[in-house]
Length: 204
Image (cartoon, rainbow, N blue to C red; front, side):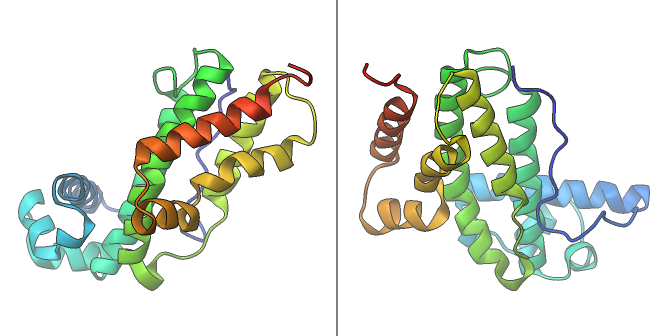
């Protein structure tokens, strides 16, 4: 079982300032509304007007909380990544603790692939508001290294983890899925085959 780890910071450079209770409620309602609209209609269809209407607040509240649509998309990216991390750390198996390490690794790949494709659209929509951060990669790399160790994989685990994670990064998935037209299922099957080759004992 993967030991409990704190969620890593995503986009910000430090801890956010404490919000008033009503402001925090509005912020959460707007993020929930934005996420629902993304899932139903895609990132391109999400406007500040639609998010405000879905959350039951005025359009001005969106700008007070996030500054712009780009700021809202950056906050949604942060919110989505944090929720995904929580599902890995404490969620139900096989993504969360409780399943054998190989099942967890395969579930991780499926989930991360889908999350990365969603996040690539959010990153584009967030523009300059999405500050660069290595925290998400640090989290997934640590998780994969831990699972490889549990599987008894020998060799340089940080390098092997990098090889496993590379096909799940935005530039590669964008090329394969959106440019080359590969199905998500095809990409996942190829990734699972890579994992099988890495975890297979020498001489097997």
